[in-house]
Each structure stands twice: as structure tokens, then as C-alpha cells.
Length: 195
Image (cartoon, rainbow, N blue to C red; front, side):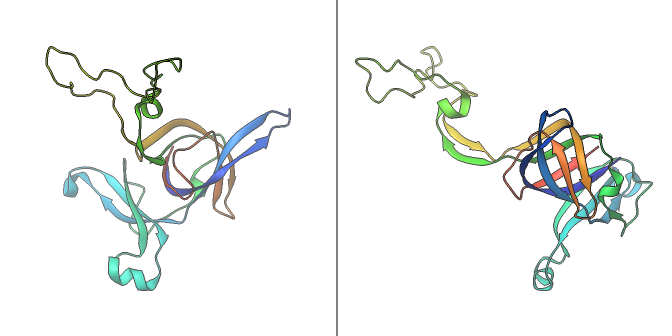
């Protein structure tokens, strides 16, 4: 079981020897500490809680923990004990990983942007201010809008997991890795990386 916490830096691209372009996402990760080991006998399930990104002294007194982020990873716990450090050394080039993060928030959006609706009517004669409307939202038999109808609302800020991503490069000196493809979230988003 390999896992680590990190932050998204930005997207970039690298070139292979044959000249093909590979889109990559730069991620800073590492220096995570095992804070708690949960066992089936004591807690009912097996998990490891790790902390990431140290807090300044003035904030430790308020929160009571020296870490900005605490996350649990379920799995076998025999190889871990409290105080262990988790770094990028556990990952290798070519590893297939799963990355989870919170997507960008887009606020309140209409049905065309949120669900991909085509719009109610064409933009020809007789159509005024109706280009991007939903159209009918219900039918006359129940005389109400049925639950689950796709309508305007808040978009984004969802937890998204992307599977089967490939590690292209690892820089243990600067605690950064390059992951092939796109990863959810804005710059600075907390990421959970599992192999």
C-alpha cells in the first residue's frame, strides 16, 4: 500500500525522445508523518492517519495539532507505526496511481453550462431572451417537477478521483513529481495520491 499527500503546482508539458508532447501536472508531495495507526481490534477498521504541511507555532496552540492537513488511508497497517515519515521514495517511475482532489468551484451556473443543454430555441426571428433557457421542466400528470431533474444550480467543488495516471518523473530533492495528464482542482489543491 503506497499513499501520500501533496499539492497541485501547475500543468506543463515534456517532450519524449521521438518528439511527441506529453501533458503533465506538477505536484509537490512528501514529508508526511504517521500521526495515528487504527487497528481492527481497537477502532473497528484498519487505517493510517497522516499529517502534511507543518503549521507555525502560533497556530499550533489554536488547533492543537502541528499539521495543516490530516487524512486517513485505509488498508494494511502492519508496516507502519506512529512517527514514521512517508516520502516520495516509496513511488517509482511508471507507477499507476489514483489521485483524488476537489474540483474548481464555478458558482451558480445555468443548464447549458452545467449539463450541456443545447438551449430551448434557435436564434432566429421571434426569439427574445430565450437562447439558453431550459424549456419545460415537468409534465402535467404529477403537476410538479420530478426529483432529479437537471436544472441550474451550483457547479464544481466536487470530490473527483482520477484513476490509472502514470508517474513520469520524480524529483526527491525538491519533493516534486510529474504525473501524466490532468488532475482535478486549482493550483494549491490538496491531493491524495494512492498506488
